[in-house]
Every structure is written in C-alpha cells, then in structure tokens.
Length: 364
Image 1 (cartoon, helix red, strand yellow):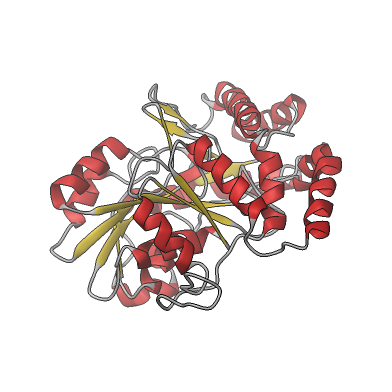
Image 2 (cartoon, rainbow, N blue to C red):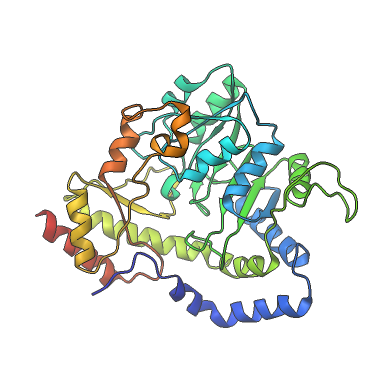
C-alpha cells in the first residue's frame, strides 16, 4: 500500500464540476482583479471567523508583512515569535526592518508565554504567536502579557484556519491575524493566497488600500503601498471549499484520534486540551528513532516529512541575529525528533491503520 503525504487532486476531483463552473463564471464576468467575487468571499470568511473584516492578499506571508507594516512596525523595533515555525514567520519581521526575537516553545510546540516574557525589552513592539500544526497558541497568557507590556498581538494562523480557543476562532484573538490559502493548507486554493482578519475597521480600511498600491481611488494614491491582492479566481475556489471546511477538519480530527490511539504506546503523540480545537494541519509524532523510522516508512510506501528540521534561528538567513545552537533547547529537540505523518480528509482508515502498523513494526 502507498500512502502519499498529500493528495491535492483527490479533493479537487470531489469538487471539480463546481470549481470549473465557478472559474468559468469568473472568466465570463471579465472581472479579474478585486471586485464582487472577492468581496463576497471576504464577507463569508469574516463571518466564519467571527471578525468584522477579512482582506484577501497574495499569500500568507504578505498577510503578516502588510499587517506589521500598517501597524507601524519597523527599524528599531523588536517582534517576538517562535523559532520552530516556517521561515516566513521570521522573514515578515525582518522585511519591515524590525528585529526578529525568538523565545522557546512549550511541550505543545507553541510559544511558551514565560519564555516570551523573558524576551521582552524596551524595543519590543509586538508578539506573533504561531498556531503551529493547527493547534492554538496559549492566547490567554500571551494576550495578558501583551496588555501588561503594551504590545501588539498579530496571530500567525497560516496553519490553523477553523481552529478555536476558549470558544473563539483562531484569527479573532489578537489585533489582527494572517492566514495562508496555499494549496497545502486546510483551506487551500489553486495557487498562492492569503487573508488578513481583524476587528479593527480603521486597520482594515488602510490594509485594503495598502494591498492595492496605496490607492484610495483609481487615480489617487494616498500613500506608498504594495501590489498584493487575492485574485477572484482563487476567491471563488476558496468560497466553494469554505462550505466543506468544518467537515474536513472533523475528518482530520478523526484521523488524529486514530493515530493517537494506535501510536501512544510507541511514540510521543500530540494531546488536545479541553479548551482548544486543533485542526491538525500536521500530525506530528516525536521519537529518538526519527531518522531510521522515516527511512523505513518511505521504503514501505509511507511518505513523511519534518516541519521543520532547521529552526529559524539556526538558518543562514538569521545568522546576523547572533543566535547559536542550544539557545532554544525545546525547539531544537523537537526539530531533531519529530515526524509529520500523512493527514488529510481523503485519507482512508485503511491507510491510517497501515501507517500505524508500519511504525509498530519498526519500533517494537
């Protein structure tokens, strides 16, 4: 049996007729930049997230970068985040001219509020909690820290659309949030895409101009901006998929529970807290036998990955920040022991059981 790590075509084929009709409708409309179809998706997604505004942009990285820029983050500022995220989380801070400052993570691989507090200086202006693997970060503690220190909170929700924390959707828990619509995400389009979510109407108004060159009308530029817009052709695909998102996330939770039950005596498995709903963008196990197990699984037809093998603070791009190996022991240990297993709604129980069986064969 072969178990692909992802199978994007399977999801597309289940919706192909509806997607092709929607794309054809965009083509016949003649409206290919911004417009009603994008606005309709933005409105529906804002309602789903429980926020006043959703602003479509070109990708998830831009969602965070544009937000930081409009919030005034720049040279001389420091922004605290986790070192075990995708490289873009560090890049968006550096791209504003600010300095990325890392703090170690807790057992759930999300930012440890105590470590974040220790990283605060007079130059700190914001915190970017990362909802890694679809699991909500400890927002109650991080928001309390931000309020005490007068810091902005911008959620990196790229991997966590549909997740919730203490009864509220991820993306509604800070000043603003950035989501990714990359094809690999739980709500993915047929290319790149991103969303900014916020309850701040003034911020949303500025962001809508900022994503479109700073224009306040076709011919009037209020300030220098960027060209970062979500295309209507992606918006209509996302609109179709949004109707299925909760069902898909429920299925990934079923798969996660099946993995957990079958693997908890063999490896370290992620555990859910009663006040959070994880959407399992990735299902990450940890074992000291990581490298051998990964090779064995690949040989047996089970694709697997590591998210991520090199923490941001140890990347060449971040060398100027002066961090070294050992600075963030939890993040570094997890990078050396984790494996991401296949998890997506189209995965069958038989495939999941095959993965469990093969892990057992190697570790027993």
